Length: 511
Image (cartoon, rainbow, N blue to C red; front, side):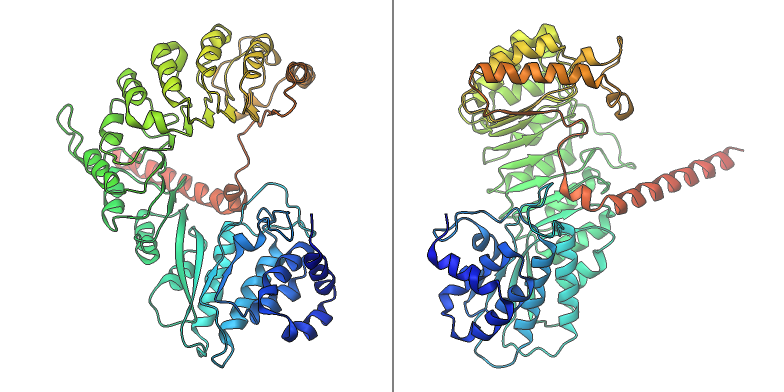
């Protein structure tokens, strides 16, 4: 639905020359409307002009593109390269202008959602890494210009730093000199960095302002690094923390602690307990056998999101999780890589029962779920009446077992998304689980299509065509990895080369 005002805005921005000539006569409160209309039509020249002459104290990209009374459409999932570059160029034009009539104080560039398929006319996205690189480069260029504005404009940003853009980001965040733009980092994602560079950019970003911190993939941290990282700023506003694989491993040169003592982990847990806003914790692929209570027990705020996939949890850990304060508040839970129904049937059932009033998303990938587990799994899931998303890829379930499970899933009134594995019937007999990527892709497509159609028919017969089902073989789309895949590949090749050189040096020493 579009208001007459929005239709008029579309008509005006459709003619960039006319819009430029008429802008001085436009009321200030109509600039947000013109901006959304320009973004919708991908009128980058008009967007740049609007930002250059922005008459309001705030420019907040997310709310401007979101649904409104004038236009119900949501444009926040359009990370349109042309439009976002025009925003940045317009902002630079704005701060370089002389005179004291400019009122802009805050430019909030957050709120964009990166999706797999772009719906903007050009179809070309500028992802989080690209937006960071563009902002950093612009800040660096402006630092070299004479500053005409009386005060810097605060730019709120979600920063994604890797080795490829580290120098520019560090310079943009650093106190090299006064510039017309002051970057305030609300979230930071770090990949392909050594620990020293990570700690450096984190200090520049300002830990006291961070809401989200993601340290992922090719940042090789051990427990000593994590302790140092968490100790340096306190993170009073941090809501979400993601740590890379093996982040709780002991430092290589450390002396083994006496049995039952985990001084580094206890120190990390104490640092986490001081973060009173922390409600999301992602620590997948870290070995936490028998350590979950040490890590989560001291937390003062119940977690809403917990990812402990492939953390080698034992019965003690699962018992703690099922009975702790966090269980009754969990909205998103990932328990992938644990044989839940085989090893912890009663505890797993209790955990889901405790989480049922709040649980919205559950991931059980590669949990060794077989046909004989479907009854127990269906019973445990039956209490999760608020569940909206269920993912259980990588489990050796037959088509017949999946039909039974889908029949049970039809009873969950809020379920909207299911990611299910390629049925075991579609692979050669005797195939091993978990599968590697090569084996995973070698299945009978015709058998899969027939079974998938049958599963959708189960949903249709139950009147549940509102449930979207899919089998993403290699996991869900990750826009950040997609954007930096070339850099990550180069990083891995260099790491492999270094490992070979070290191995060769050791062999020569042995000779």
